Image (tube, rainbow, N blue to C red; front, side, top):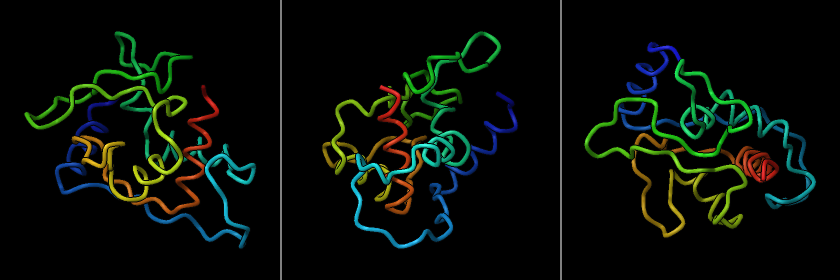
Length: 145
C-alpha cells in the first residue's frame, strides 16, 4: 500500500469522518432485506473494495504490504500508525458473523454504530450509505462466508 494513500486516509479520518456519496438512482423496486435476491452482490463488492475500501483495513498483508489473496476481510492490524484513541486491529467482516441484518444496516447507514449500540473507534469511517448501497455491501460480505 502506498504511503500517500495512508496519509490521505488519515487526513480524511482526522477531518471528522468520511461519508460515501449516494449512489446513482436505481429503478424503483419492492422493499428489500439485505438477504434478498434483489441485493446486488457485484455492486456490493465494488463498494467494499473500491469506494468504502473495507478491504484495506480488514485484510491481512504480506511483508511487502500486499493483501494476502484468499484472506480478504478476515481481520488484520490497522495499516496506519494509530493514535491513542484508535483501534489497533480491524476485525473480521467476512460473512458479517455476529451481525444480524438490522445491526449491519445501522453500522453502514448511521455512522459506525456497533452491535451494542456504541460508537466504533476510529479509524473506522462513519459511513452514511444509502439503504440500497448498504444492502449490497452486506450481501457481498455475507457471500464470502
